Amino acid sequence: MSTTARFSGKVVLVTGSSNGIGRATAILFAQEGAKVTITGRNAQRLEDTKQEILKAGIPEDHVLAIATDLATEEGQDKLINETIQKFGKLDILVNNAGAAFNDDEAKTGVDQNVSIYDKIMQINLRSVVTLTQKAKKYLVEAKGEVVNVSSIAAGPQAYPALPYYAMSKSALNQYTRSVAIDLIQHGVRVNSVSPGAVATGFRQAMGMPVETYEKYTQFLQSHKECIPYGSIGQPIDIAHIIAFLADRKLSSYIIGQTIVADGGSTLVMGMQAHNMMDILKS
Image (cartoon, rainbow, N blue to C red; front, side, top):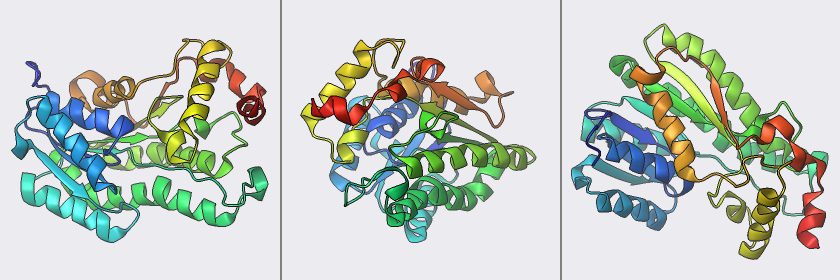
């Protein structure tokens, strides 16, 4: 455990913490002294996250693992209720869970099936809205923090390959801004982070083969017009920003803002000038 333990005494709920950014965030908060609730649909991957936390020297009673479907209100009720039952309060809510889906008929752009839109909006937006509503009482009591995880797909540049995903994240950014004004009246801060290309397994979850993903990342990293920094981000890079936004001492005057962490991609957006599908097929 960190010697600074800046989140000692805090209780943190991190959604989508069975891998990627959520896992790195949960581990970081635990190392910094917080008690954490981790959650995801895949029980085995969630257990892997728990074991990573325990390997870092965190007491087992500081970790609550709940395998549930965040897209259902029953699953959300379980998250909130069991967190309060075990830890007695909730200080920080990290709305990290998110997803994108390919069309079963391989349609893209405007032709994508509307059922894909419904699934994406349910997970990426509606679940954030309802979980935040359910957590509000406890966050107000704690004068706590909400950190939403968005994406550079939110714009302002277009994202034609996955328009519904981009729409969900753009809406999430507006939700962050609007709710921040409401909740700060009760002492609760709301902010968000928009990651660029990060090694999270996101593309593989959409069905991209490992070999294709490696080709994809190699292309991005070797073309400075895609990522000026020269490499894709790691989950811990985003976790540190989430922790910064949740730290009242370090970021107290930041309200309703979205921090972009993308290695400079949105400054140039060269990746949108390439037909990635043609590149991956070559």
